[in-house]
Length: 242
Length: 271
Image 1 (cartoon, chains in turn cyan, red):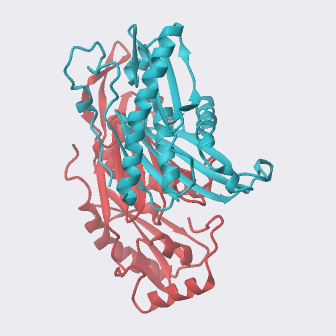
Image 2: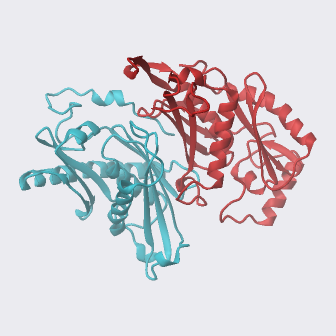
Image 3: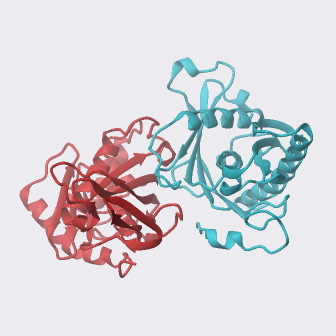
């Protein structure tokens, strides 16, 4: 059901690009998305993007046990972004840290605008994002996979939210930064959009960019989103037919 | 692992499963000594020094091994350390909650750890770099991503495979300083193989590799860890109902044959 893209083939790409792995500035790393990979979850998806391996499970809409979180007129959408201890070079201590808490929050905010939450008052939709291996850009990979998992769970949505990052590495504005580019890079701009309307549901930026560079990065990220969006739809079609 | 958080099992299902087993049958037509389909793949996480994806039926665990240099325990200054940790992440079941490890998760990690440690799977003395000061610590992390019964056997099988897949960088001592050569990787010194076999008691019978459906109605459970030479390295009984001596001895006897077959799923040599 799941095959793994080996990291070695990622670097092989000719052209005269300045990027470490030889990609063009608007080229994404190889990716694949699969829907419905887990037995117990109501919906699930698996995504590989370069060396990233992310698995997402969705439970719900289901009863919300924590009363103070309950909304009388709509469902709440809770996200938990978590990295496996073996997903990074130096073992990560299990459990939430400040980074994962923040990513969980912005992920749920990125997904919420697309979901018909008002159809499920007083309930919860839980999205669990597990990063099995990290190679730069995991929050975007998590959001892209989470949309597919939500669709797989049959949660009604306006559209599949999709996310992609762009940034600046070695003076050049490029899309989908790899781990090396991210670490040595000057800036990172993760973006999530609702493709049908072009609305942006997540936007972060760290690092220094001129307004022109920022605009270029934003456009590159949106272009990347559109490419991933096609793969999301294909994953759903592969699972359920057209 | 028997106590389910919120799932309520109707009495009628409990009864029909009990009757099924009494008649020598199981819901998925397996015999009492049969495992579900086992799928094992190693080297699945390139960032981990050793890794495995294990599936028994629909139960699925990712296991990663990561080495770190640390201080040995003061009572065993010349041996390395194996640390096992497990997370029943909420992805795996509607009954698992986020938060610190609960008792089920702690039991799973400790039983897995005991099975590997007591069997002497790793030659821990070879992981000593400077006696009393620096040793390799191997962190084994079990990431349960789909829970469909019998986590124990999957955890031990996956851990065994991940350890056999593990390669650590060569560490040398130069002027009392540890120098690591990340280019030169050596396999972990594996000296034993051990696996675990879990029985569930339903309808008075002991059945191997209980699925979730079976775990939810079982009276009690016994897990037996066994080395390749047939000696018992770990045992854990779970559940609130008792077992009698005969049942336990019979289970041990059956474990010998069953683990022999299970061993065939492991990679052939330590590479």
